[in-house]
Image (cartoon, rainbow, N blue to C red; front, side):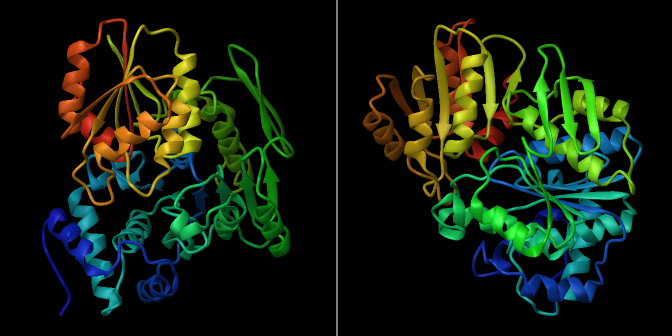
Length: 422
């Protein structure tokens, strides 16, 4: 007997206990349910993978397509505050009722097939996009690429934003192994992109082996920063006079360059003009990616949770200017390279407010405090039971010219957004 419920919360609780493990790499089970549901999108599908930068790239792609007047479906993960954030049409999160209808369709088709939370949600998202008649779909890889549930759909364009060390238990402990997993979203004869300036040889080899049309940043497309604007170059020529993306951080120019290259690759099917690209870059929004809240003290939210992202955050904090004292509200999952993250950020942080997150896989605040001390940092360290407690303490001692940077796992940023600190 299949499950049924009227509320999204009940469905999500069902999904959480449906499969024996939260992550179960493989496409066979998902493909069988996909075929039963006859999920065969007639619209172009873009799959975006990478260690970091996936969310920003998906957000800019979707903003450009929306500016051009297309109905765009965007599937991303994880969410910050509400599951609905994962499934958006025209940048608007789906309603509870729409998500429930699609989850119900998956439940009816799976015929007892065991699916993980992410697999179930991925099939439901595509069902919703097909039902809504979107013009183009942007799908973000959840983990890896080759065996990720989104890869059960055939991409017209696939892109790997960056490759670095993360999720070693599933993807391997070096860039070559991880690069090969991420390259698994490439398809023979189809446009494939990599915006990592030093792509792993395994990624290059796989693309060549399957004869994907691989385009690399710096070789086939790229950008020139011209101080007040920037210029894109690619196979189809140049696009000068572009505005900087509304998303902060110097690395966003590489992401934006990738976005324009993808838009160009699909120009014959869903053309987007330069004016719409400019509008998309200016209007794009994405919570938790070097998000600076207005007011004083300066409050920065960032989901940096691995060394690659921490290096970018450290550079952004440096570029932001001088602040007498920078407070960190920080927590992390135990399976992350916490010491690596701390090592890259210790020169930017004066006071650490470390949180004992009450979530599975979280590292204890005591463990994190010991790693900070072992890093050679002379910063003060305080421990709190919740993000709210940590932020309250940081806010009580921070001067108006100081800075509070809340970062680490998505839960830290989600809890900060829930507090509505401004």
